[in-house]
Image 1 (cartoon, rainbow, N blue to C red):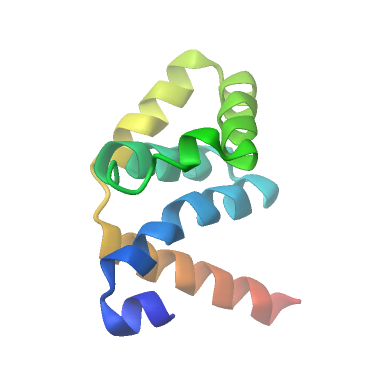
Image 2 (spheres, rainbow, N blue to C red):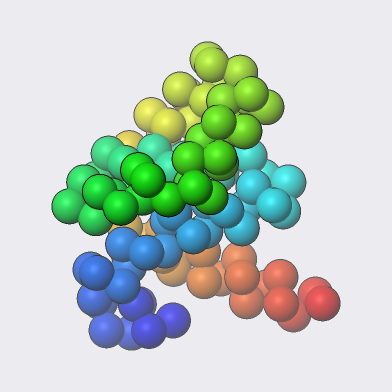
Length: 102
């Protein structure tokens, strides 16, 4: 919410990789792969440490295994076309609706 309210690019840059973990654990691997695609294609100034962050490395491996190479690459390409602010808003809406269901 803070990332959206402040339009802070550094805060918003944390949304896609963290949300990718959430979506994968919620059984939405395609969305997770799209968010990884967004992260590594548009947020290169932010990804140096992510390339060595075990949860993200493991997630990429698991996504490739689960989806297969072709589907993973298709999801990655869709992620490249996502816009950061719109994606952050969608993620917030998803999380808020998920919390409301608990």
